[in-house]
Length: 478
Ligand code: TRP
Image (cartoon, rainbow, N blue to C red):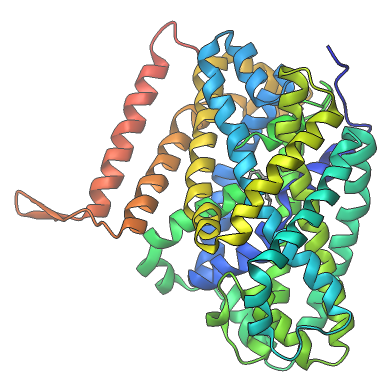
């Protein structure tokens, strides 16, 4: 066995985990999702999902990781003592590979914008520049450069590479974002952006609740890096004296702070330029925001700072994605870290090449496919914790946690075993139906019309109750 890596300090782990969480999800995907789904209405649902689903889900991954001291495949197989759990583990590794394949392309755009902001190359025609940069040979070249940077850090290992890089990158991101938000808020017209983003708006929320929910749930999982074993793997490098509930809370709070701050940079900028939120979309950051820098004084400096933040955030996330297949190859396949990193980089040269040259594949992978796989993956981890680990999960949760947090362990287990999987499957089904344009027809039951939504909620509640009853039967795991 090779000696496993481990974190040097408590702060090191938190910063690396926050580094994984804070990424393009916060700075690129979040403002885009919020703009498409009603701004403040989306923000409210998103925050609720982070607290009610994100934190308990994150804890599930941390519990599996620290309990097993292995990366996803080895973790599930060794804890369950059964090969049946190999497939879900491999699914997680595969999801991480897909994820990095498209993430590297966006990381490449970021790298390019960071470099070209200095000369103002995109200032004349931001829209046309982005179309040229977003796919094709150029996009591929920058994706490769981004992958090389990622590989360099992962190659150096857990404490000397990932931890050390995170300790520099995370504070830099926070300081620069606060400065950017303070500046953006002083722009004329910024107020409209702030109220689109922060004014609570019940009417929009009620009218669109079932469109907003799957989008908010998908975004919450993506931003907390849940569903493909990133957090699980990072927790496997932890020792026993740490409070997992405290760490999970710290990670979620810091990540949310950065997401909300990013919104306070992006929305004031979009509104100040008169674009409104409608100019969001996947190009929001690279077209609308880039256009803002073109018209503003000191635009080149601001561009370098802004895209520098995005680049750092993207790198600390891509590092955490690469670490999953690397850990798998090192632990389960007995490769050295060096060959694992080198081999995987050649694989990614192909897969991110496909994403760089074929925009349709890129769109499918980065949208629907990743949402589906991450949700499925997280449901797998939750069911594992609830139904396979059971009491052991409660022990692991309590290890290192104080009395107060310890008392939350049992309610948490029920949530993880029953409530959250049902909720996630519900969002999965509504999300897929929505994407396919299918609606569940209303049914008239004894004179009362039951809407499609009510039917789905009813099925979800029934499922939850059945699962709960099974879990309570004598001799079961809990
Ligand atoms: N959370 C990161 C972001 O917001 C992306 C990320 C890193 C991720 N590791 C992950 C997403 C694992 C899902 C699963 O950009």
